[in-house]
Length: 432
Image (cartoon, rainbow, N blue to C red; front, side, top):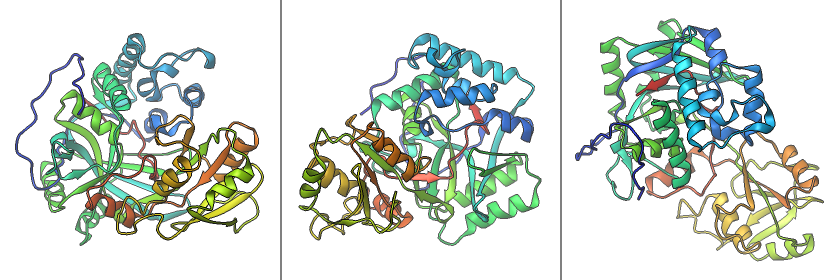
């Protein structure tokens, strides 16, 4: 259980009664861009999409009004080699000052009591729309061991140190900027249809594109009747699933806040991309690795020449510095009835990292987790450069697997889902 954070701010008591369905409330005071040009200038990647702080520093040189000055204040420095300690009081104070400067900047405006419709389309197929409803989720609805009746189901373990870092930033800025991505079943499609109708019949408030060319569009909703209608539609869902942002929601709970910034998306509109690994093998030779893999995997050459990213469940790629291999878990190496054991990340953790390499803890520093913003060619280059022993490529978790984990009330293996496209920060910020 989290220890309370001793930070300034009004601590709100958590309600005792747990509603039977997920809820969404309007943002009482929201900071938003004034138009699309402002959205392009302000919005940015989430902090956890960067492999290093240096990457965020590079973006700030091109985009000096970026919200990264607030969410990653350690990068708001004159030189790339002068990055600050993100947890230092002076750094957190800088984040608060930068947020206030953004509030005063004419490229933003403050609105009251809003929801918003949020649509993301990918350039590979603009006809496929991920569309959801943004607002404030209720912290006491998150399911935890202490709150087993919660209707917002977390499916990943939370590292207290990481959540505490987000909590410190939230308290220092008095703002919630990182949206939590929640999925809902929407089995009848009513929720999606209502969002679609609203978007088609109202002018977009602002839009922008991200680094991958994905288009992000926002429709601000202020009409009380429309807000009530959306709230009633969401209330038809029996539960929601935290797809991305477990630590951001945990930070709000740690601070004792009643709400956290979120978007609810129909699950069928969402896409999961691969989440791969680079691993230190501790001096194990290629031949020794190959021999030890036989215990739990059927091992053969990869089906392609060169870097390989598997696309089918239970196909696992390994690059040992000389060749790409395909691993398939042997019968009996996992229980297919257990939703967590059926995930390839769990199979690899138990039968490769723990059994073969002696890396029992998935949080061990010898494992580097690499999201889908780095491909298999980049992974091979890292191994070829001698910075890691092997690369492991995993097929993406399916939405069926993801929902099954949630419904079994289990946790996903660490770093096993990389939802794309990512929600862009800085499009709607909650001023607390």
